[in-house]
Length: 151
Ligand SMILES: [Zn+2]
Image (cartoon, rainbow, N blue to C red; front, top):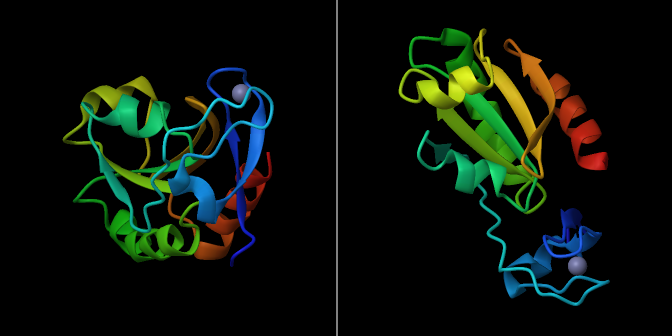
């Protein structure tokens, strides 16, 4: 939809700006301090994150991030994967969907005490603001997203 917006916090003054998704790539300006944001990528597929890229892709992300912690041997993770692909498309510009293979990236997995798989971690401005452990149906994930993106 053309009028979709996303809340982005200005790194200079801390003001939260409501920015139309269509303008993210233009490097929009903060309404208060007029500092411009860097162009913000709006991926429409899950972004693969590793221990090495985690800080850049997730903690420093200007878009809110839903991180899927998964493993190859985890059948429920595999069952949830197409739903996450679909959500990445549907929420492009409002949300970054990211995936972390916990076996290959133990540092990040243990830092966030990921014990059950799959686990969804919801990050905003570098902090976890919500967690969902275990396989969830699509409607349930969307309920989390609705709450997550509203604040
Ligand atoms: Zn600002």
